[in-house]
Length: 353
Image (cartoon, rainbow, N blue to C red):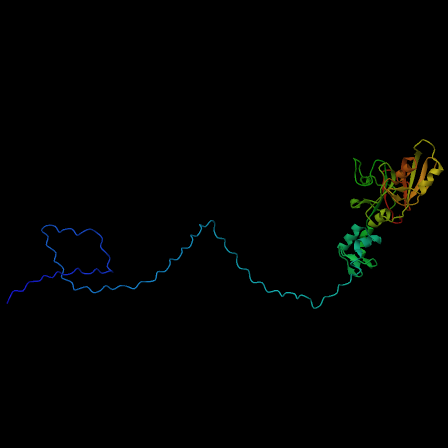
């Protein structure tokens, strides 16, 4: 048999697995001398067709949130939650019924009780307030309160305790010297009430009242007398007497002895007395009729029923007369009498202004 030629078949290069990563680097280094040769790999079977993985849909990248700003301060604690308020019923647009306005009572349009007491001559404003605060005043049978108003014809009842307290209040008659003021001190002059002391009490006082320091408390002048005038000056703790003497509606007579002279140096005539009796006015107010007559060759006797500031001096100036001296000798039915200058006495129970 003829010899057949020998065929040498080289094994093919195996196909690279696409899922296997490539190995980067240079060619393999030669084995060192004397090293055993590595066995050659066995011929691999023919590679099958590569398997291609299906392509996946690429999702768009989500945008990153902006970085949060750095905290500048600590967050404040939240206040505790308020309880839910109860629902309030809303009023209807038109009320079903509207009460008619109540008519005003006479008490709403009346006068204050303390003023009403003063107008009736029961007490002064200060006394009335003290009595009301003490519960001693009743209006139409009900206990009055401070600031209360009442009808002008309301019935006022005063407790007997108030009457007793009022009876213990004193009235002082002083023969004021020249240079003393009747009210508050002024220009270095002392008030005349400073003369009411135990040392200046007149020995001829027949009132039977003994001096007590409490009699000086709330002792106020009931009228004025000029600093250059002398005569009868009244101080009292009784508000009724003060109002009777210095009230706007007073008609109490006040008698003065006035020494005058004409400014031009001539003699005072009887015709000068006519304007003093009627027709003069002060500060735009017509003066009430007065009495003017001769007491003696040097003095006039003038009786007034009002008491304006420096009234007699200003009246004489209007008719050209100058007042050289003025002395008050009577208030109402209470005369100055023999009371010495600078001395005082109590008003007796049988005396009334």
